[in-house]
Length: 265
Image (cartoon, rainbow, N blue to C red; front, side):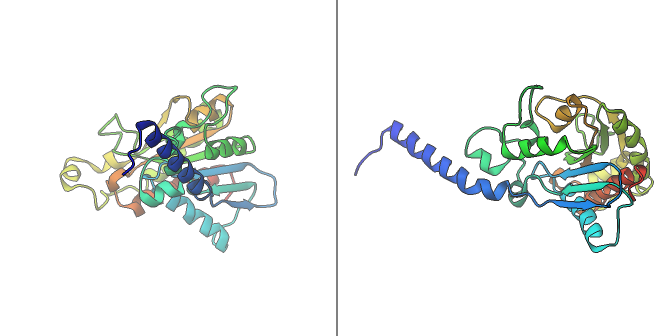
């Protein structure tokens, strides 16, 4: 029996990890994209969702919007809309936060930390670079995520809030987006942990608006520092603290509100 040295073992692992990366990369970076053009002048809006695979609600909600537009149930009055419902399809498939193919390289595993970290830099993975390039051709980015708790009762979580970027357009849209959504939150959702539910009021489930900067490497930081209007949606949904249909409809309602405010619906 031949024993492998530690150096040989490391080399074999590197080879295996490299092969797995190149096998998975074409699958995990293939993004389903929908493009809608009214044929009339107007803003170009980009919707992106599920950067983290354990935050599926945005992909479901934005897919609903794409289906409504594709079927003709909804049509654009002006401008263009690009929808990429899921930026992390492999992570969503196995329900993990990270980019699975990047795990084999042991770096750049969190998509929303892979965007440029300085003004003269670019993203550290294929998907982040693709979104960076696309972002310079749009007039607003709406980015769908999910927090692990409700910000009103747990300020450490970002869940159940809409965050405006620095651009005046973002800041003008967010208050009405939150107001439109909160009108629909009139009762406690089913499916929440009963002990938590009993302690919470209906108002605790309603959204708030925020304006703040973020860490380099996030799409919010990239947008703010390139003067691109940006809105971050954070529903509360990690570990299914609320039912998926509740959270996905919240993403849909918020996106529709922004489009209506811009006169696109």
